[in-house]
Length: 403
Ligand code: AMP
Ligand code: MG
Image 1 (cartoon, rainbow, N blue to C red):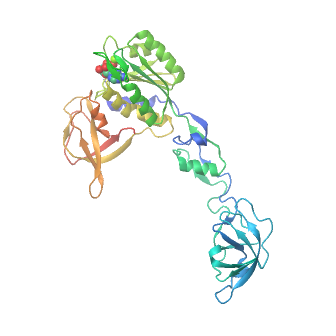
Image 2 (cartoon, rainbow, N blue to C red):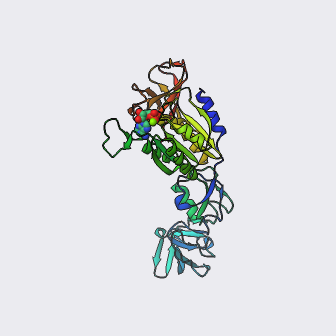
Image 3 (cartoon, protein in one colour):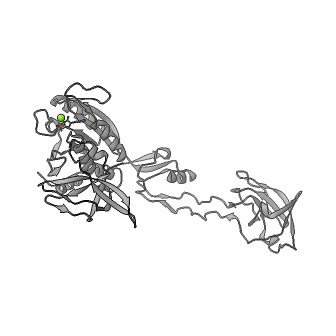
């Protein structure tokens, strides 16, 4: 049996490179940008008004005052979307809307509230400052400026920026394609009433939603009876479609556990089987060319924990992020000990409280690996090495479950 550190190291050595693809921006939120995005044009694209008012020449109005009104003739309008076609000559003004192009000749905007209008004329009594209420071409960024860095996880706010620049596609990392294969002849669809001895199948949905939470894409999902030939057929089908095969169950030593043999028969090389850990000891990992196969134990808690620690960071890496978990540090609320010769993944609740605010880490009482409440009530886990004990108040690192 290998340690959890050895297992992680083997997995990291086997990872294929992340793949990139072009993606229309409307489908890009959640994807990781594979290339920097530089501005194809300046912003604003043209010099425009920040206010509704009048575009004027500073020279004309700079001496305006309460007792020295200046009268300008209105010669037209620059509407948003419809620029004024002429030029602002001395003694004239052009009505202008927010966002409308500043007409040639003008350099300053007087807000509509600050002028007195009399038919075709305005009277200016406060000059303000030269260039006021004008947004200059390129004042936000110039053409060629770096706007988004490769590695950015795209979200709606980035999509807006891309759309405003007319960028309709971006290069992103392709989300890893995952097949979820659940084994067990005792399993029935969770919507059906199980007969005595049957078990409701819950790992399929759990793994499917976990994969989605990790940023992967489930491209194939099936329930496989405990049968060697059917397991082999399903491995072939899944490997045709997916980068990663996730099995649940069928990796223990029972006569009905066929995943290891089926994988070997289909050309997968076993890289490890069994890790010194609790839960999740029978974890199996294999590879064939660029396809990875994880054989998670069928026990729902073990499947969840081994997914969280081993599979989740793999999906992160393949979707263009770091091989990592979401972690936080906190203070243990109760002493814990691991008397075993295996590493324990101890489920904990994370509370944010105190002054100054910090994380309090509460070990959960019921840790049975057949008890789904031990993960449903937990926010994550801490790693307790064999023989290790920790006192209340000690700082620990919490691995948060994928959300
Ligand atoms: P296995 O690893 O196949 O020996 O399964 C271990 C335990 O987990 C058995 O009690 C199974 O009935 C249970 N189990 C296996 N697969 C599932 C599943 N998909 N949903 C719920 N329980 C399961
Ligand atoms: Mg089984």
